[in-house]
Length: 401
Image (cartoon, rainbow, N blue to C red; front, side, top):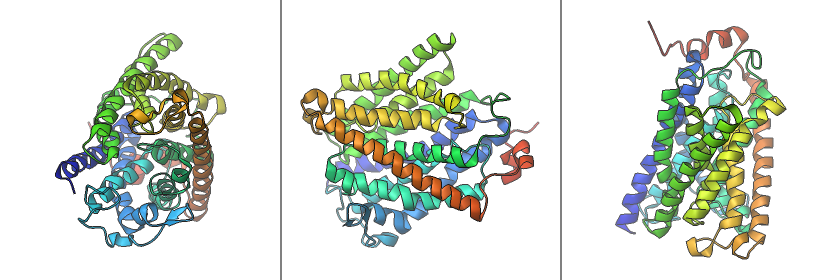
């Protein structure tokens, strides 16, 4: 084992953990003041719930021995055999690899919560998240990073374009279809109550994303350095392009647009971070800001209530990033060659992985939401929604006086 790699991934795991409270702030500032605590609670509670699911069974299903390319085995249940010896990453302890991956399993269901904010029962959110990690996240993780069929096919996903972003967006879309729109949606304004909180959350996400992407090299090496560089360039580029297109579209550049653009760029570069050049990352980010701005307009066209734009940013951004990987990936940066480097088949492979991810994650998530709705109900009642979920679900208020 290598001490430098171990120290580096320890820090990266902590950075990725910090992203979930950052997401809580990002989402919390975007909702109405009567729902800020319930929205923050969705993310913060998953630090506990998702971790327990991961150590009991999620890790084993994701990274256990391959079964038909579909799911991992059960040999690591309850972290059996997961100690300080080398694991899937040969230069760091097995337990460190496990806990680094745990932080991804924590934030991914938290991302989904942006779609059903302001109207879901807390108990239903917890039940869905437990089942979703086991039935959707673990299989996706195994397919891409655990030796499953997508990895065998040659699909590239450096840090989670499919595993994290497209999977959560597909589940978010399913949530909007099963839960329906918030009461008053389309008839009254739903104005973010605290944009400074959202910008702070975006800054924490940007900071933590360096652990998310650079850490996915699983070593303190040149690939980690390049992933760090491409991550920052893409985020900066997308923040600029989003603000420009927003300015042209609505006549005003907004703080929310800058923050949303940065997150869009971070999403878009995630699958490509360790496979592309810095200037390719610049293009990926510039395009990502534009397409994700367009993505958030889709809910107005198709009339679904994705409260905090999970589909528009994580779904569209993750899909663009996966396809962009197939265009700009280069052997010179640790991957395989893509379209612009003489291998058009890689773009086709990426497209197959995108379509498969959306179909699988949407269908299974839809079934889970429907099942939970039948058993315990998904939505709070009209009176509770009107009062706000902070009071009705948690008996708390964020602001007094």
